[in-house]
Length: 352
Image (cartoon, rainbow, N blue to C red; front, top):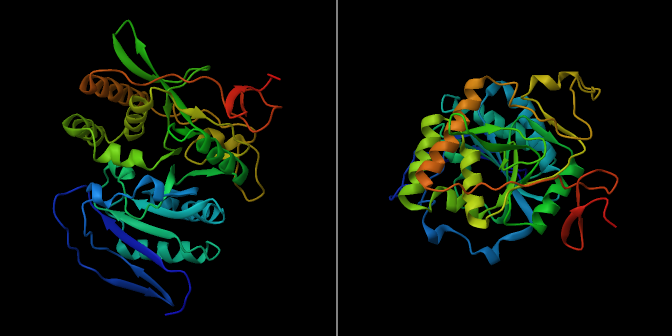
């Protein structure tokens, strides 16, 4: 076989207490070998499988990009190619959560990703054993970096904004950093938690683009005992809210809210309201200067209600409300309104 980049498919299951043996078979496209299933020789939650924090790569990150819809594969390929072109990216794991997708389709996807990614050899396509959203946060042995980017397959970020977000995370490695935020609140008349947007504060970072330290994957998936296991079951029952639960985990750890970062160009292809934005010359539209607050009002009230119910259930099971509000937006230019980094601290940009 030549030295061209190999695309891999591997399968991970939810944590178990025994070794899982799986049947292996191969697809061969030209000189690209695709491994469709990989044997798990160790429980992902086994502490001995976790790397010591001091051995993790600190100047690069691992991208975990969620995939489900076969109709979005062309867009997924474009997004993966963009991340593969960045020197900040150590590896890219495409987490395929649709169990009905044929193996042949994923094998072709792995081949295409390899061919379109500028010779980058760190791409894996991982078929999940179920469509559980908790799988997004499994602590995978292939993650060798301190930072992890959790993102969706329909959000494009310009390289400059991506680099700035990673820089801000490096200055605040215990916090969640990203471009899309929401808030929790309480409806006093109904005495229940709700999921909403506030114009001046936020408490929830969405997994459309979420930077976090890799240790949080273990805390989400493996730590917390029966309480955390119960909350993960709520995610499965609701088929939603894994991002909210990760915010609970991090806020409970650091007693701080997430950090919103300003972006130059970010496009959320999953939101139809962006169709009026400027065309990029390729028949695609983009947002310039800011990230639109998308995805909430464009969805049915049932979705918002379900996420509010998640907040209430997590609060009930945990016995406390760890979510904390943050204010302002970190920007890359003193010409913008918001917060800037000066002397290692976040200050209002108009401060001298």
